[in-house]
Every structure is written in C-alpha cells, then in structure tokens.
Length: 359
Ligand code: GDP
Ligand code: ZN
Image 1 (cartoon, rainbow, N blue to C red):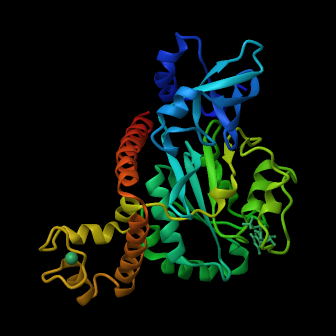
Image 2 (image 1 turned 60 degrees about the vertical axis):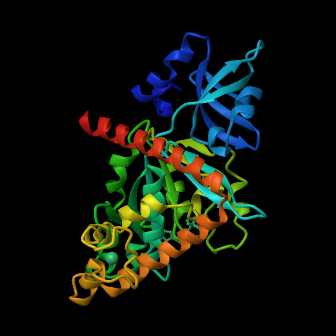
Image 3 (image 1 turned 45 degrees about the vertical axis):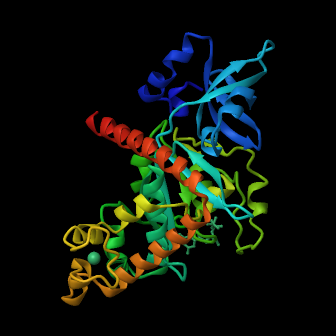
C-alpha cells in the first residue's frame, strides 16, 4: 500500500522530512495492543514498540502513539520489528476520560478527517446527545457529519419535522438522512470516502454502525447483531484491525472506544456547538458572564424576547456543568499540559483545514 493510500499527505511529508535523512521510515498505527503497536508501512506491516527515550520523555499519554497516528520508525536489523521514535503532529485526536482513582486520558483515535455522528430515527433520536457528540467532534479537530439513520422508519413528510427538531444543533454541519439497511441516501457519503481519507463512526449502540461498516466493507466482515446485546466486546472479536482500508480507498478507524465516545474537556467544542449563544454573549455586560444570575445578560435577554429558546440555554448550562465537573476531576498540571497540547493540535488542525480549503 502506498503512503498516500494510508492517508499520507504533504503535511506528513513535511513533518517527516528531518527524520528521513536519518534513516527512519514512516508508518501508520493500525492496532494498539497496550505498549505494542501494529504499524502499516509502504511495504507491509510489522509490530513496533515505543523507544525508551520517547517513553521517558513523554509528559502524558498524548505524547505516545494512538491508532491512526503517523509514527517515525527505526527497523530492527532483521527488519521484521520496529521501534517508534516519534509521533508526527496530529491533525485531529479523539480521547476520553478513564474513570478511576485519578482521571486519566485514553487516546481513542488520531488523524480522523471525518467523523460520522450517527443516530437512529427511532427511539434513539436525541438532539441533545448529538449536541454532545458535536462538541466532542469539534474539540477533536475532525470534521463532524451527522447521519440520521433508519429514515425508512419515518414518513418522508416527517423528515422535515425531524430536521426542524434538530434545529440549530445541525447548523454548519452536513446532515444526511440515510437508511443503511435499505441502501438509501448512502451516495451522499461519497465525498467523505475519497481514497486516503480517514473516517470514524460515533453513536450509541443499535443505531446501525455495524450495518454501515459492513456496507462499506462490502462483505460480512463484521457480524451485525440483529438483537442489541449488552456485551459489546463480542462485536470486536472478529475485527483484528482498528484501522481498516475500505474497498473504495478510504480508511476507517473502528476502535471500541471510538464508537461510544465520552466527553473529554470539550470547552472549545462547547463554544462552537453553541455559537449562537457565543455570539449573543459578546453583548453581555460581564465578559465572564455565565448567563445565570448576572445582570445585563444579552443571552437571557434573547430568551426573554424569544430570539433564543429557553431549552437551548438550559442545554448549554447542562453541558457546561458537565464539563466543569470533569475539569475539576483532572489535576491542575494535567489540565495545563492538555490545554497547551490542545492549542497546538487546534492550530495544526486549523492550518491544515485552511491549506486543504486553499487547494
Ligand atoms: P450498532 O450497534 O450501531 O452497530 O447497530 P447495528 O448495525 O448492529 O444495527 C442495530 C439494528 O438496527 C439492527 O437490527 C439493524 O438491522 C438495524 N438497522 C440498521 N440500519 C437500519 C436502517 O436503515 N433501518 C432500519 N429500520 N433498521 C436498521
Ligand atoms: Zn450573559
């Protein structure tokens, strides 16, 4: 597989250039088994371990490889194993909190271009949940696309109502009504599935993620459970690859953590998901107004005169509270480090998007 088929672009080539002169080879992480990684190279794949130096210098989990990462590898003498010396800058990163004595971070997927936020137009349909997924997606640096699956279950006339219910949640984000099972609306996914593009799927259990993956793979690589099972582990026993090349040339990242993503300090994402509130907030008297009990609050004024729904402000507050709760659980140092890296990742992501847009 060529590097570009693995998602390599001018961006990675530039970051890798200094290493090329020193005899390193680039590879993309396809599977993470704890400390060992299966990496894909131009001429095949191999197992690789993180070098002692990289491990020692790592200030946090973020400095170590994740599925989807481009890594700098030194091959062993025999050539069948490798050592990972560096992780190239990411254009996006999904991570989540791991509950325990201390909240730590788990890297879920790196360098995802498009993340499909999937929901079913059955009892699963929940604009609030989509709002959270969106916040997480924006925070990651990947481009979110909303897939409303099981469109066959609602009358065509009801589709408008559903989109209306989605309201501002879907503003500025592509929204596609599809029926994976009946192969309807899937042609709309074409632009996101171009060769070398990396995609990932997020959504609760039962929305149709496995069905879509099977469809994209074009074969029954992954058994779709007809009945929703509480044991999710069974779903992943058949798939030994976490980064899979689809027949059309796009790359799919499917890790257990990716499918059901938890919130991880989505502060910046919060601003973008609620950009109507953020815009109004610029007119608030206090710069740090929480739109709660403060006087001369432009957001509450907008609710009072009907320009903003009370429900939306309530959701904003709810998500804000959750994020604050999460933030308190992290220790201060970890937070500072994370902020610094987020900024870099965001800067990189924006730069990358700008360059992509300029092409
Ligand atoms: P996952 O848990 O998100 O991977 O969901 P699955 O792919 O296992 O699908 C859950 C159930 O929804 C299965 O019974 C599928 O057959 C069904 N399903 C998937 N897509 C559609 C669709 O477009 N319409 C309808 N009616 N059912 C669907
Ligand atoms: Zn305010």
